[in-house]
Image (cartoon, rainbow, N blue to C red; front, side, top):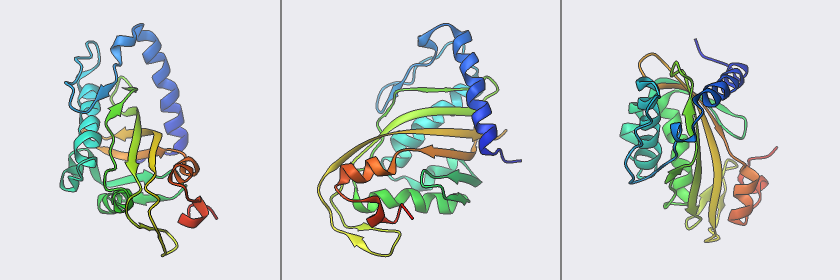
Length: 197
């Protein structure tokens, strides 16, 4: 059964005692593309595997557009909640949505996870990252128009709250970033893109 947002918030609240109980900032080290995975002594194996899987998703699969490997971290029926409020179901649709940013910023990348942790039962993970890229190609908008490139760069903090099933795959994902800040950095308005009513 899929979890709703209130469950996600509750799960996030439950993560805090786990972090506090650990008593050590070294328990939850950040990660960077190309660097070895930290040992994370004391973190349950299932949770450590999920965090490593998520690192691979962002640093390799997403950044280098290896869409054929998204199934290594996501279930076929994954539900994804996007920052603009829309929700999708299914892996194929999620992959299509992830491709959008590469249309206008082919150098889109995620290379660092400053904060990454999860619940002791490996049901939930929370990972922060930065989404970077350059607006160098025409942007297809949700309004069916094209916005010409401004050649401006973006550096957007984001958070992914993930729910993982018993098979170790993410079956629900909450994505958080500021679309207005992204558009401001690109030199366009959210209304032009169709991100606001």
